[in-house]
Amino acid sequence: MEDKKKPARPWDLLNPNIERVPDEIRNKRYDICNSCELLNTVTKTCAACGCFMSQKTKLPNAFCPKDKWDIYIDDKMTGLV
Image (tube, rainbow, N blue to C red; front, top):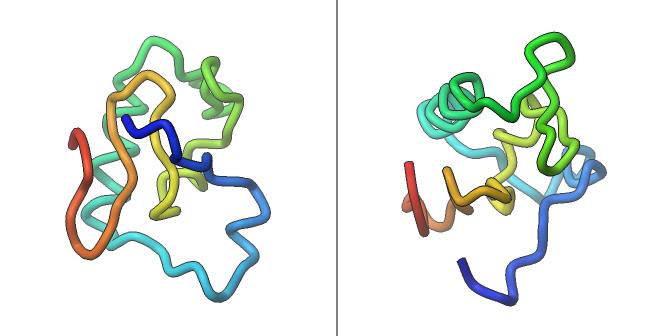
Protein backbone atom coordinates (compact mmCIF):
# COMPACT_ATOMS: atom_id res chain seq x y z
CA MET A 1 0.00 0.00 0.00
CA GLU A 2 1.32 3.42 -0.95
CA ASP A 3 2.07 5.93 1.80
CA LYS A 4 0.31 8.76 -0.07
CA LYS A 5 -3.12 7.14 -0.22
CA LYS A 6 -5.86 9.22 1.31
CA PRO A 7 -8.60 7.20 2.97
CA ALA A 8 -12.14 7.49 1.68
CA ARG A 9 -14.23 9.88 3.70
CA PRO A 10 -17.93 9.47 4.45
CA TRP A 11 -18.80 12.68 2.62
CA ASP A 12 -17.20 11.29 -0.56
CA LEU A 13 -20.50 9.47 -1.04
CA LEU A 14 -22.20 12.86 -1.44
CA ASN A 15 -19.72 14.14 -4.03
CA PRO A 16 -21.24 13.78 -7.52
CA ASN A 17 -17.75 14.06 -9.04
CA ILE A 18 -16.61 10.81 -7.43
CA GLU A 19 -17.84 7.92 -9.50
CA ARG A 20 -18.72 4.59 -7.94
CA VAL A 21 -16.90 1.36 -8.62
CA PRO A 22 -18.61 -1.19 -10.89
CA ASP A 23 -21.07 -3.46 -9.11
CA GLU A 24 -18.77 -6.44 -9.67
CA ILE A 25 -15.93 -4.77 -7.75
CA ARG A 26 -18.25 -3.53 -5.01
CA ASN A 27 -19.64 -7.03 -4.59
CA LYS A 28 -16.15 -8.59 -4.43
CA ARG A 29 -15.09 -6.07 -1.80
CA TYR A 30 -18.23 -6.57 0.26
CA ASP A 31 -17.91 -10.37 0.06
CA ILE A 32 -14.41 -10.04 1.48
CA CYS A 33 -15.73 -7.85 4.28
CA ASN A 34 -18.59 -10.24 5.03
CA SER A 35 -16.11 -13.08 5.50
CA CYS A 36 -13.79 -10.99 7.71
CA GLU A 37 -13.64 -11.53 11.47
CA LEU A 38 -13.47 -7.74 11.97
CA LEU A 39 -16.91 -7.07 10.50
CA ASN A 40 -19.64 -6.43 13.04
CA THR A 41 -22.43 -8.54 11.54
CA VAL A 42 -25.16 -6.54 13.27
CA THR A 43 -24.13 -3.02 12.21
CA LYS A 44 -22.06 -4.07 9.15
CA THR A 45 -19.25 -1.83 10.37
CA CYS A 46 -15.54 -2.63 10.37
CA ALA A 47 -13.77 -2.88 13.72
CA ALA A 48 -10.51 -1.72 12.09
CA CYS A 49 -11.74 1.49 10.44
CA GLY A 50 -15.26 2.00 11.84
CA CYS A 51 -16.82 2.42 8.40
CA PHE A 52 -20.18 1.17 7.18
CA MET A 53 -18.91 -1.33 4.67
CA SER A 54 -22.04 -1.40 2.51
CA GLN A 55 -21.17 2.19 1.62
CA LYS A 56 -17.38 2.25 1.77
CA THR A 57 -17.09 -0.58 -0.76
CA LYS A 58 -18.72 1.67 -3.39
CA LEU A 59 -15.95 4.28 -3.39
CA PRO A 60 -12.98 3.95 -5.77
CA ASN A 61 -10.56 5.65 -3.35
CA ALA A 62 -11.50 3.33 -0.46
CA PHE A 63 -9.21 0.55 0.74
CA CYS A 64 -9.18 -2.02 3.48
CA PRO A 65 -6.96 -1.05 6.43
CA LYS A 66 -5.99 -4.73 6.72
CA ASP A 67 -4.93 -4.91 3.02
CA LYS A 68 -7.67 -7.32 2.02
CA TRP A 69 -8.73 -5.08 -0.91
CA ASP A 70 -7.36 -1.86 -2.36
CA ILE A 71 -8.31 1.28 -4.29
CA TYR A 72 -9.79 1.07 -7.78
CA ILE A 73 -8.25 3.13 -10.60
CA ASP A 74 -9.10 3.07 -14.30
CA ASP A 75 -10.86 -0.29 -14.37
CA LYS A 76 -8.05 -1.95 -12.41
CA MET A 77 -7.60 -2.76 -8.78
CA THR A 78 -4.27 -1.50 -7.54
CA GLY A 79 -4.03 -4.29 -5.02
CA LEU A 80 -5.93 -7.31 -3.81
CA VAL A 81 -9.36 -8.58 -4.92
